[in-house]
Each structure stands twice: as structure tokens, then as C-alpha cells.
Amino acid sequence: AQWRGQVTDVQKVLLAISLMVVGECVSMYMFYRSWNKTDEVSDMFFLAGSVLSLLKICMSFRGVLLLSKLLCEEVSGSHKIDVALAIYAGANFNFRLLERFRAGYGLD
Image (cartoon, rainbow, N blue to C red):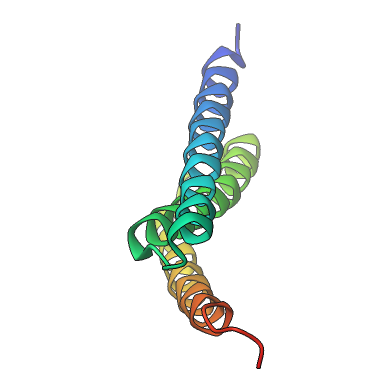
């Protein structure tokens, strides 16, 4: 009974990650499907897939960090985690935009 709250928190994080994975798969499928059919790149589907992928990774890191913090019973430091994840999110988003720009051109 002591760990019931932590177990439900972990299950909620896992559910959120699973839903993000489904959304990422659907949006990337639609991205490649529209690219193959129309021979034009859809920025909307790529952006949705990239953002969901990024949120999935950040949610995974946050879940692990907060769970370890709960187990160690340290309450302070949540803002440090948020700042670190925001910096990581910005760097990863920039990387994905560069990757999309590079992959959008044919090999000549």
C-alpha cells in the first residue's frame, strides 16, 4: 500500500509515452505516405512526428528522473530537471530540423 501512489504515477507516465509513440508512428506514416504519393514534403506531418518524438523522449527522461527522486525522497530540484529537459528539447528540435532539411533533397 505504501508504493501504490508511485506505481500509479509510473503507469500514467507509461500510458502517456505509449500514446505519444502511437501518435508519432501515425504522423510519420502519413508524412512518408504523402511524400511518396505527391512527391512533395508535408511539413505539418513532419513537425507533428518530430514534436511527438521529442516529447516522448523528454517524458521518458522526466519519468525516470522523478521516479528516482521519489525513491530517494528528495523533493527539491524539480525546476532543474525542467530546465535541463527544455535545453535538451531545443537542441533535439534543432537537430531534427537540420535532418529534415538535409533529407528533403535528392542525391545528385
